[in-house]
Length: 257
Image (cartoon, rainbow, N blue to C red; front, side):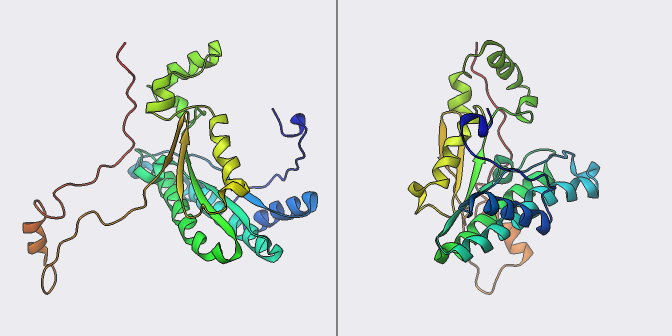
């Protein structure tokens, strides 16, 4: 249902996200309609999935332009306005598990979504004094994109056909639900209740709410005078390389029938 059909007030601007001029139009329209700007949610996105050796310059540039540059230009325009108002604000940036873990065929998308979390951490520092919080949301929801995952597709289709909720293993183990399941976190981050929450990457999906860890050093070793290539090769297997990190989004596991 639309915002207006539920009794709310809404306005819209048709613009290709990415340019500073388009971002300014969005902020100006909100201020003109509502008198001020309190919250920005950056949710625009496109996909141009290709493996590295098949990805074109355009595939890469288009995704980065919408997701990464679009988040930057819109957040910049919003931050300028919010700082002028002097009463704080909320920036809610939409990221993805692909940006946290990597995902096959999504080098462009994963890089942009990882960059969005990096910007959230950075802007949280820059805008803290102005009372503006900045957080990244890492959602998992049944969309046109996720329904292409073979393990999910038949379950999503059956739920849509019958009107029954998605099964527990999807909503809890995989943390996958509907688009509506993501709305509560957006609402919280836009509200006064989240006043002290900033610089965080927060996962949401189905029945699952999670806080993502920030990258940190996992293992450290020292060598007097520094490390030569040979010294690293000798020390790596039983030293800092003894327990390498995993990467990629694990394939979903449906329970045994």
